[in-house]
Amino acid sequence: MGRREHENVIGNQRNMLKTLKKEIRMTKKKSNTPRHKRLNRDGRLQAAKSWLVKYNGNNKVRGYSKHFAVDLLCAAQELKMLGILVEEKYIKQLEIDKERRIKNNQQKKEKKQLEEYYGQDENDFFEYWVH
Image (cartoon, rainbow, N blue to C red; front, side):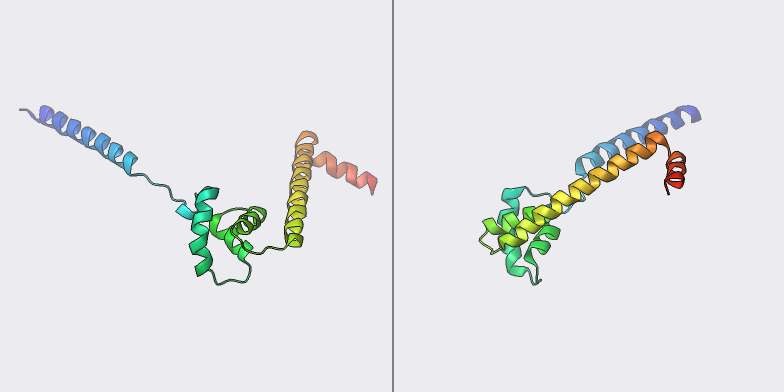
């Protein structure tokens, strides 16, 4: 076997090894997100029972929200399902805050779209003449 033939055989073997490594790597790829943040409601409610025993913080709603990666309103509702006392006043305030946040985000989005449409320079020009 000549030198070129030998190099071709080695090259083919290297290519086969690369493809095998890719196939192996694809099957072993795992999610980087922690399991407790990937749970659905049923899973969270089951896991929350053991989490509540271990939790030492003052605000259970906020701790639940951070641990299970849900918003505060969802955390309050799920803790209420588990029998934890959550004041209605607090839940109402969370609902108001959520609505306010949605409204503010919508206004920011509209403002950004207007700035993109008209351009920032024109807005500065109009502000100069209005003031």
